[in-house]
Image 1 (tube, protein in one colour):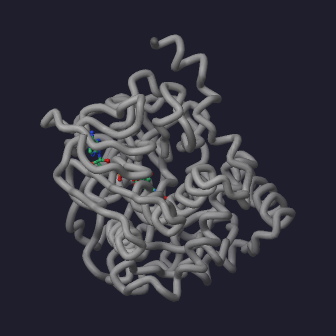
Image 2 (tube, protein in one colour; image 1 turned 60 degrees about the horizontal axis):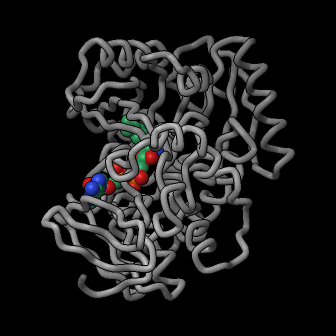
Amino acid sequence: MTQSYDIIVVGAGIVGAACAMECARGGLRTLVLDRGTVGGGTTAAGMGHLVVMDDSEAQFALTSFSRKLWREMRPQLPREVEFDATGTLWVAADDEEMAEVARKQKFYEERGVGVEVLNAQAVAKAEPNLRPGLAGGLRVPDDGVVYPPCGAQYFLEQAEKAGAELRTRVSVKTLLPEGGVELADGSRISAGRSVSATGPWSPELTPGLPVRKRKGHLVITERDPGFVHHQIVELGYLKSAHSAGKESVAFNIQPRITGQMLIGSSRQFDVETSAVDQHILNRMLQRAFAYLPGLKRLSAIRVWTGHRAATPDQLPLIGPSLVSEKIWLATGHEGLGITTSLGTGRLLADMLLGRQSEIDAAPFSPARFAKEVLAHE
Ligand SMILES: Cc1cc2nc3c(=O)[nH]c(=O)nc-3n(C[C@H](O)[C@H](O)[C@H](O)COP(=O)(O)OP(=O)(O)OC[C@H]3O[C@@H](n4cnc5c(N)ncnc54)[C@H](O)[C@@H]3O)c2cc1C
């Protein structure tokens, strides 16, 4: 056994980086290990939309708390993190989706989140490149956009300033029930506890964990500054994100600070390969063209895929695992891990340090899946 730490964070994606920053700032001797590079996993594939969501009270609590932490951090963020206060524009195609606008408005306003309902004319004025004839929309002005890998890099720099150590290109083979980890080369590093922040790969280190890979495609275009101004999401997106079916697509577009447009997104369960699937990519682009016909004249510069870490109830796993008190989890963030990284790090450190948390951590406890995990053993 080599040197001892209070905590070893496995995974230097944005979630592990936020956990390390919060742990180190809380005075814990922290080591971060990643078999790749900082932010090189799902974090490099994600879209970077910072968004308050309302699928459940717990999801709302974590996303709104996390968005608040991002906004507080904004003045310190370096340029490379590309924080852009675009807001979100949820667009409604018809009256049925306008009813969803009204529901969302009520939900957010009752909980103190600023929103603005737009009628058909106001949507057309806000985003002139949208196709004519949309019913309206909901603007959430305090949502934003970041560039995730540089976010992870910044959090880790803050962790290192607070005394944390980072080692990349180090693969962890086992999380030890007595604390610490065993590396792929057989050596061991001792620690009070380990935290698996290994995203879609987390079941490799904690077998039986109810985390499934959910593949997504993204396309980035050439530059056309001002083509859209908001992160625009179709309200049909909610149906897609909730669908338990094997594959779905929904229109979602983001203006980057570079003037490029980032177009999403697709969802496919149980597809291990990272190869681009032409059929699903075509479906995704046709959906985007239906909302923004002018997109057809922009060239696509790059297409890529990533795997979200999906849990059965669309909430992450944050806290001690069922395997051992010494093995903790910070995973299962599906399509919201960029947004919720900061809230996750704060909750995890609060639990480890015995501090009072600003939001209730209970809905994210891995213990809620006790039956599934025990059935696997
Ligand atoms: C197409 C797409 C679009 C998305 N859009 C958004 C969005 O707009 N907004 C949003 O909030 N979220 C979005 N997400 C989700 C977001 O990207 C993820 O939730 C987030 O990046 C997860 O971060 P992480 O740190 O948990 O995982 P990762 O970034 O995957 O990091 C896990 C790390 O663990 C390391 N690792 C794994 N196993 C081991 C091991 N045995 N030993 C050592 N290291 C190991 C890996 O190398 C990796 O670096 C999107 C995701 C996808 C795929």
